[in-house]
Length: 264
Image 1 (cartoon, helix red, strand yellow):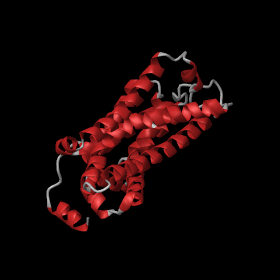
Image 2 (cartoon, helix red, strand yellow; image 1 turned 180 degrees about the vertical axis):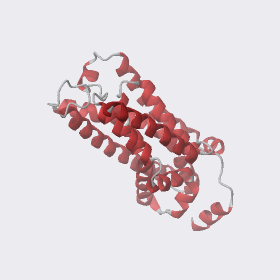
Image 3 (tube, helix red, strand yellow; image 1 turned 90 degrees about the horizontal axis):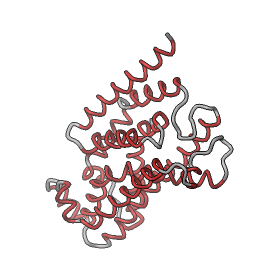
Image 4 (spheres, one colour; image 1 turned 120 degrees about the vertical axis):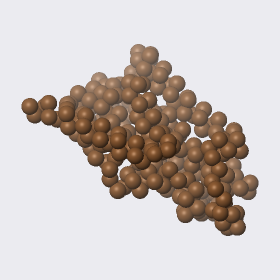
């Protein structure tokens, strides 16, 4: 394995198209989970009267256990829909570097750890939703009802785009081979640790943008799609780091404008 890693480090990393061609089933599985997440979100947005959709939109902060589970499930599906496509290059690169030995088990362990990070984030997001609803700052569809909250979230997300932590996390996510070879661990358990590390880096990149879901709401598919595209462009597109800073300027301008209007 060490010889393989050294050899891999001396070769130019394969492009995404080549990685997909080598792992078509894994690619389809990851994208299928994302598509299922989008399909469920679209169904909920269209059929808001369905009992499950109603559970995710409690009219007060007096949530039942069913409300909590439904809302956590909704956030988890949303994170899977939004984050898995942009994680595809990292996952495929990891499986490619793992070689044929226990490839499937290591790949599953890596993905499971990555998903676990976002499941945990979803629990935190659900808790934040409850707190904001209890304070009367979001409505049952998680749309901000407070102009102050909207403005502050936009400014905070914009500022974070220029932070050192954002830059560090984004640079690691944009160079899968560098991250993986630098953090390589053997075995299935090692793959799990690497998946956790990547999940934390991904969370470090995107948590502030995900917080903007409290601005537009989780039933606003256009808003969710826009945030997903922003995440994907930052991570995958050439010049993604410059695009992240440009987005930061836009977010700060929008937030400051909102706050200035409030104080006028």
